[in-house]
Image 1 (cartoon, rainbow, N blue to C red):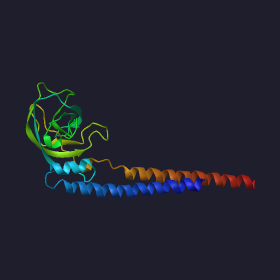
Image 2 (image 1 turned 90 degrees about the vertical axis):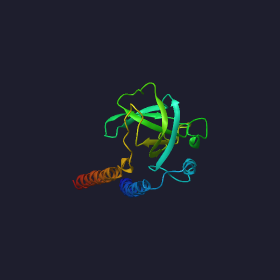
Image 3 (image 1 turned 45 degrees about the vertical axis):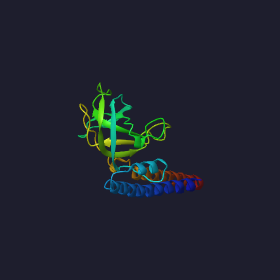
Length: 201
């Protein structure tokens, strides 16, 4: 049983190292995608049905809702790295509305408080970076979020996300599994040694 557990732990460690290589390849691929042409509406649709990814791609969104209430306010950093909050707006760009809710929200700016300025008037186009599934797979939530290079007054621009932001803890997990395997092996070796000593006595 101990041998099976040790082999399993070593296998999990190797799997984490393989996952680390996969993550590095993914980050490199996403980094390259940042230099592709701006995402077209048809590409957004293909991303929604799982035929391609637009993660970290550049896009332009028309945002002319006028006086508007924020769709959401969520944690995020300013362009200079200060923690705070992003003010998200559903722009209702016809290219991105396919159901009852918006398929894309735009971070129209950053603030250091969890409240949006009032009134909030949005009437412009935004160019920025696309994030897929900002709310995970929660039903009825937007498929995409745009982090623009600019912001509406009096908000400040948000920090642009980069592929390197993706978590990469696989090496740590691999070390932990190998450490568990080594620890269990040592404990078992001590147990066997004491058992032989007791048997000889």
